Image 1 (cartoon, rainbow, N blue to C red):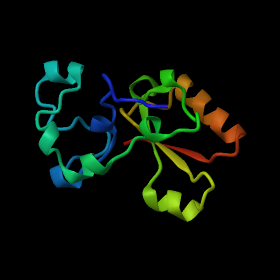
Image 2 (image 1 turned 45 degrees about the vertical axis):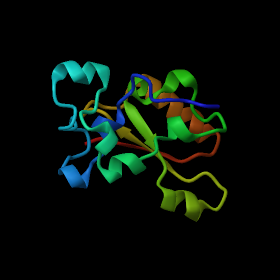
Image 3 (image 1 turned 180 degrees about the vertical axis):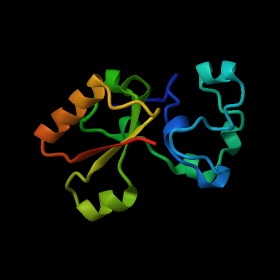
Length: 130
């Protein structure tokens, strides 16, 4: 299963970036103009901060079908993520999946259904919003 971000840039909102003093849930200052936001254009993509380069959205990287194609982060309103430390500590078991909200809005129905499905499969999930 090979995926690409496409028009999704939910991580540019959801995650915090220390190098930019960007708080989670806030627009990234590198997506400068409102017209760029609609296109998901990072103004310095090739030179983006290291934290951005290293971030790996679970929807993009998972290979076992946890998330369906239509459950892309921009459609869920949250970015699924597993820290490398958590994955390593889990030793082959699925660690806790954190869904970082892209706004200060409570969890939506689509995301709630995804989390409930995962929990039925024995996967612990957490919803975190700014």
